[in-house]
Image (tube, rainbow, N blue to C red; front, side, top):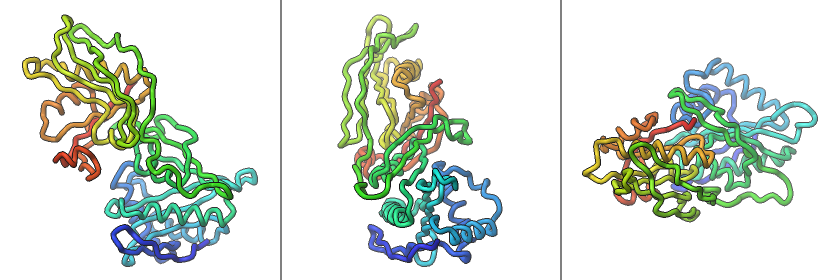
Length: 347
């Protein structure tokens, strides 16, 4: 089917046109999907995996137009496609007619302008009008912005597929499955903060030592949902005689903050530097992270901090790139602008 055309405002005052893409839009839609697949790794396909070209996209548009319940919802700004979403049947069997899937992509240039909210809201309304009873989706476990958006509109987490995606650098990402029930009694918006934090049971840490160092617990801190702080262990890095040589910490769990601040922090006092004590402390912290069922950790540092980057590499971190800090982040407000990000799989 084709949805009714509507205007939707962006937060900067501009208005986008929401409508179903037509056959004439096939080339632009194909190029949009290819472009968004190259901007982040949060799309299922890499750009080079787009096969079939414009003709195949035109066929898919025609099939959606012919459907009584499925549809594309495309966002146009000044005649250009900047967003793409769709509602599609999960399966054609009678027992599954109430279920539909949802997917969305937005050019990074237009993220943060409220377009995602406008498109999700419109898609849910149309899906309900078309007779679907629930909307289902999958999302990368570290795509926290998308997860927050979905939770805002009432989607709930129903499960996790571990290691669902293998990236080019050899690292894995879990997939979070989510569902939104449609019909009377279901809210259109939930908790906008989502599940940024979690409470945990702090564990015994007496085992955190090796032949050179031991980590002595100094304090713990619970989650702070308002600030997006995760539960945290704070340690002194000590030699075998108990002499303090530095500090380190472990933040348990993952949220948008850890994309920029990481799960681990460390600092070694100047007289003890150059002996990999920070890296060795990280290796011990990995063991604690595994006891909290963490499948991976993120470590970040400033691009100019050569010593910290070497620590990340010593600890087995796979370099993911240099990422700009968002303006809402505390480190941005303190003057930082970029962070290196390293990913460590915990076996």
